[in-house]
Image (cartoon, rainbow, N blue to C red; front, side, top):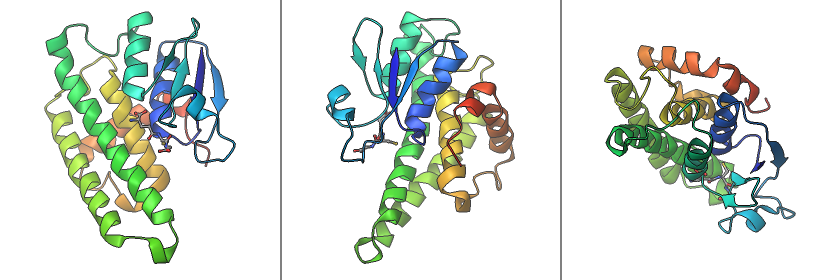
Length: 202
Ligand SMILES: N[C@@H](CCC(=O)N[C@@H](CS)C(=O)NCC(=O)O)C(=O)O
């Protein structure tokens, strides 16, 4: 298997964590989709990482689908309940964590534009999504609603990648502050070997 990814992408980190937790070997192909020389569109017409090239040559994107593919092909340890009803809260929590990442990535991109083109209103809007998303994540965690249910799920993986990405790009968000349960949960996730091995370069 080959994983096309950038080393800082939190979506790609989800898949790197899943591959590590399932003890699957793969070739990591680093490709930054923003570079002129990128070959990412050869694998994903949307030009985004991660993309997975399976051993049979099939190509998969985006991160929820790749995770699903890996869970179907390599079910142990299982990251998504096979029962569709039991899977719903896990999918919802994964979507929430992915949505926090979406907002953080958009805020990062906006923040990176030249001052005269930058929209503070857009940055503030994304910060609002991040804050509300974190509060919802903390509530779902407290209710074990698709999160922290004993066996690591794809929602837990997505949550860890969202929190790790905030540490990387938005230390000012201070997601641990006032969210003790989320802080403890996040530390436990980020200290797993699979997360440590996929930590973004500093
Ligand atoms: N929903 C996608 C999002 C993937 C995504 O947006 N990846 C970013 C890197 S963090 C990317 O490749 N951006 C390039 C672009 O938007 O052109 C997933 O979960 O895989």
